[in-house]
Image (tube, rainbow over all chains, first blue to last red; front, side, top):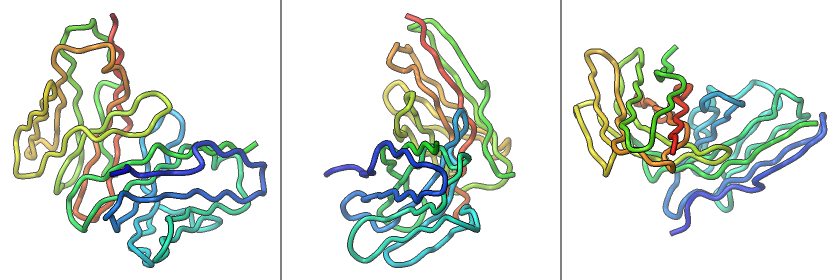
Length: 114
Length: 110
């Protein structure tokens, strides 16, 4: 059973470009979470999605950031018009069901904005 | 803030010694989880302890939870060089998302 997969692992974008980060949850998992980690800091929650639904986006910046988890395919975190402050590691996690289960993390996408 | 806080921020010990890290939080939780992160890598789940549990073991790891003090500790016994990493506690308040602390950076000196 493959773990959570994220791609790309490294992404370089110039200021003003768009960044698309993909996350494929573990097989059988229908809950996806996105977290952001700035250098030397812990992870900060961004958004929680189930298939075709955004459940909690309280950690998402109000502008430029969006996320989706379509019926088919991976979850996508999209950052429009990137700025240098968006440079961070973005981690996706998945879990099998609602409740208090552990979350399984992917290897992360390291975004660098030049 | 509900954020967990780890203590110490950094810890260096000799290989073979025990390492203890602490985590404090501010509000009632459903569970608390410990993760390890090697430099530049993703997170590896270590242990989940629920609010009605007081202690849990997994191999060389021992986690305690004191809900009255809103604190948890992670003990790594007989440390190895491969244990060098950052360790994070993450709390679940029942709303699905995890709230992470800032981490303890552990260095094992061979």
